Structure formats: structure tokens, C-alpha cells
Image (cartoon, rainbow, N blue to C red; front, side, top):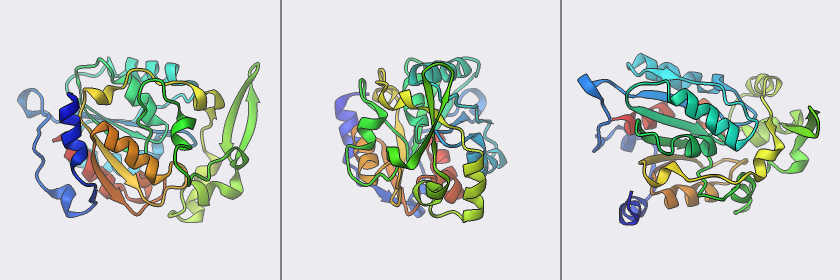
Length: 264
């Protein structure tokens, strides 16, 4: 994608979710015989693939092939390579949808894959080459996911995982969900190796692949200002919703509508 093309896309103002998502899309990503693209849903840290259930069920009902693979959460390089390996086994057009840390993974895993027709970022990191998660998370004020919000547990020799503390999980991660739900999410959260925070990203796929972005206005993990900055830089078609960091759980219908728009 040329700089001019990215600039034109970025120049359009962010649109509030609603009727705009139901408007006809200009592009179609159907393959031979009009097949719908396979949607690959990639979760982030402190979560697992079940967080996509509300979105996946809607996409499957509408005839989209869906896969929600596990994200190992061990390192940016190895997680990206793992996902790239999965993508290599899938035939036909692909739409990659990422949440949070999953954004840096798809940004790297999709690079050079001609089958990937669209990238959808849901309150996700969209790094440029050399950038880190920590650098983007702290670029603007507002994140409550500080070191003090984490419990650290060693594994292996010199390796450490980070978990969000129980007393902070609801307010920091998913403030618009019932506490009974977030208690279960906390109990089953999958931690990330803390080394991922400072690991630089590689060549970004969004420079050559069209992208869409859903900004969570009430996000307390990745500040909305950071999300808007990354979406604008990537030239993403940007939409916003009054939701916490877990938009795909809090607003699955709106999230699925955005995915379907990107997949047209």
C-alpha cells in the first residue's frame, strides 16, 4: 500500500459503531466460486480463544469458516512464527482478527502471506518495525495495567509470567462485564512471558494489507489515544465503541459486524 493510499484512508474520520457498519463495503475478498474468507481469531494476553465465542458463533451462523487458534504467549517472534505456520495450512483468502497482544502477532505473522486480504484490530497493538508493546502502551497516559497490577510467577530458568491481580482484573481488564464473568476470566487467564513487553516487532503487514480498527473508548489497558494513533498511522478504517478492553466479549455483535465488513 502506498503512502498516498494510507493517507487517504487515515484521513477519513473515525465512525461510531452502528449504521456505518451495515453500509455496503467497497471491496470484496471472496475467492473462487464466491467463497467467503476464513476468519482467523487471535486472542491476546490474560485471555484465551474462548473470548471470541460470541463473535465466532455469529460468523459461523453467517457462513464464514472460522478458526481461533491458541496464542502461546511466549515471545513475539515465536508466537508470530507459530501463527504463520497455522496460516500456511489454510487455503483461500484469510481475514485475521486480533485482540490486544494478538495485534503484534498478526502484524508479524501476516507479512508476506498473499492469502491475507484484511487485518482487523480490536483494541489491539499495531506496531511499526522496531516498536515494543510497552512503548506503545505508555505512549499516552491512561493505562492501569502497570507493574503493580500484575502478579509474577517464575517458570523454567530465569523466565517469568505475568498475571493480572484478582482484585484489579475486573476494573482494569473488563469493567463493563459482570463481576461473576470476570471472576471466571481471572481464574482461567493465560499469562504472557514478561519478555514480550520489550521485544521489538518486525516488518508490519499493515503496510501492504488493508486494515480495520475497533477503538474501545473505555479501555484501561491500552489507552484509546494510543489505539487511535496506531489506527491512523496504519490507515485503518476506524470505528469506536463505548467498551472496555474486551470489546469482542462486551459487544460481540458489533465486533462481528466489523469483521464481516472487512471480509466483504
